[in-house]
Image (cartoon, rainbow, N blue to C red; front, side, top):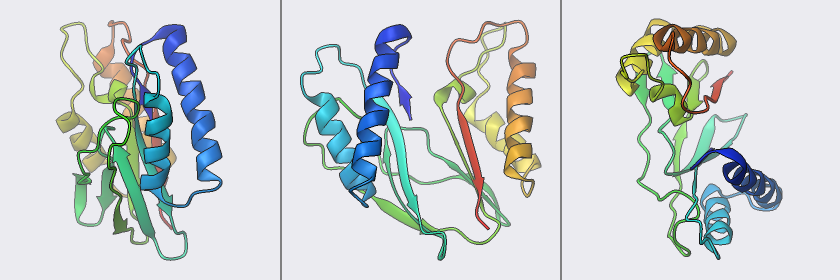
Length: 183
């Protein structure tokens, strides 16, 4: 997930969101219900209009079935033998904007060897000194060249490539990556 804004207010919102998530996820086993509950709690009395994006997924390690709900977050990248592509996600709202939004879950089945690459917008919006973005297209290109590698290697390649792209430019947003390979 990712939170709007910067500094202490954003840190507090993310801290609250993480605590709420842990509480909900320990009792509720439906991504859309977890997301809906988080949304309603964060939207209640949200005068600051801060919001969070989130991708909540529950992966059955035995079958590879992934049930997920995307709340305004960047679509994850799925890497498999067929290639590299952004997962299709429903256009659910980010968390904390409006109470009662009807979030919907989706599902897919990961095959052995599939890799999921999740990230915050700080990856694709990293700028160089000419204000050019790293971009979603460039991310797919670099991931495509590294398809089949181990998660830790893929993460390292992307972080190094972002650093090369941004050389000399100040980092304007946080960069968070989660890469997992289904075995």
